[in-house]
Structure formats: C-alpha cells, structure tokens
Length: 308
Image (cartoon, rainbow, N blue to C red; front, side):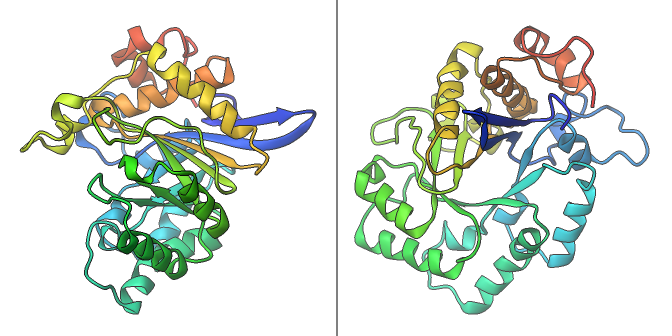
C-alpha cells in the first residue's frame, strides 16, 4: 500500500481491525480545474484515476440523478484498476430518497444494475441512502426505510438522515438489526439538525462532512455551489479525526469511510487530505495543484513533494 493514498489501516493489539478510507464526493466538477486537476489537462488524463492515486474512496454522485448500466460500472472499475484497495461509495438514485410515490420493481432493478456490478467486482464499499432534512421520523417514513432495506438487500447500505427526530437509540438498534450502517454527519447547526456523532451500526461505518455554511444552507435560491462553499480549519476537523478513530475501534470491526462533500473549488479534496493526516498522525501526499492553491491550509499536513 502506498503511503498517502487515502487508505489507513487501523491496528489494535496486533490485529487489523478496520480500514479507514478518505475521499471526496464526486469527481466531475468544472471548478476543480487548476485546483485539483492540472489545467490544461494533458492528453489521456483521467480525473477518476487521478483521484484514486491519492484517495481510498470516491463517492459516486452521478448515481443519485439516474441509474447507470453494468457496463458503465465496469468502466469505472477499469479506471481504478491500478489501486487494489480503492473502493467506491455510491449514492442511491433520488427516486427512492427524495420522492414519495410508490416505486416499481423495474425501477429497483434499474437502480441496482450498476450497484450490483460494482459489488460483484469487489469495488463497492457502501451504498448511500441520503435523505433530506425534511425526511422526519414518523411511521410512514420508517416503513419507507424498511421497504428500501428489503429492496436493496445484499448491498452494503448506509443511511443518512439529517433531522433530529431520528436521534434515538431505537433507530440505531433497528439499523443494527437490519445490518444497515448509520451515517455520521457534520452540517450547519440549526434547530432540529442532527448533532455530530460517532455511531456504528454495521460493518461499514460512515462519515459525511458537508461544510458549515449556515448562511446559505437553507437560503432560498442558493445554488449547490453556494451551499457547499466552506473550508474547514484543522481545529474544526480535529474532533472528527477523534471520532473516526473511535469508530475504527468498534467491536463491529468496520470499514470506515470518511467523505467530504464541501466540493466548491476543491475544498472537499483539501479537507479530506487534512482529515487523513490528522487521523493517521503523519503527513500525506496530495495533488500538486491542490497544495499550490491551498498551501496555507495544507502545508502542515502534506509532504513537500507531493505525488502518486
């Protein structure tokens, strides 16, 4: 395993108890040019392959917007073939998380096609069921989740809810019994938002770091870039490094995924590298463009000559 590759083994009493994988959410952002990726990109440059050299995971954002074929999933796997320990996380199609009309078996099959292909190929670490803040705990919502867990049985599911109504030990117990991981979120704090936690309910532990841009989080008309425009300081990330270590020591022996979603202008990539360094207690590698752009934030954590 190459050092600084975004994959950190955790050792306890001489035994491997967990692997921690760090990485950003998504990879196709135009505003990452010259910050995360070279500009201009050389002939044949592959953004996903480039990130896989520095990170242990990348969360697939595209699967949230529509289903993909097994053939596309196979090509994603080919692009990271040189990184044995790399695993994808993938967001479930929004049809199941942001809409409430009854779905069909055909829609489930369509959504599962790429996910099952990634899973068969040994490249799927987690399937993220991301629900909005408006999804509150009530009997109909709980039944919706139980149906989803059955529909996508056999995949490594993790559930992200953001409303404080879900902050109940009974919810964690139900997830444990269903074999579904809970997502621990960092988000702007408002009334009724879930607080930061370090919970583990399955063999896949998950953290999602969204940023703390409270001014734009619920502002009407704020676009995606504005909402996720936030760069964490090291001081803000240190408690999360502690929580990640706590999750890695869980008796459930999880794989831990730490995903940064504050994507605007590559801030997610910078903060993922900072979290990796804070968690491991060692310096890490980072894309040279990233170090040049975020030198003040990254200098204490990144080796002076970064590279794959």
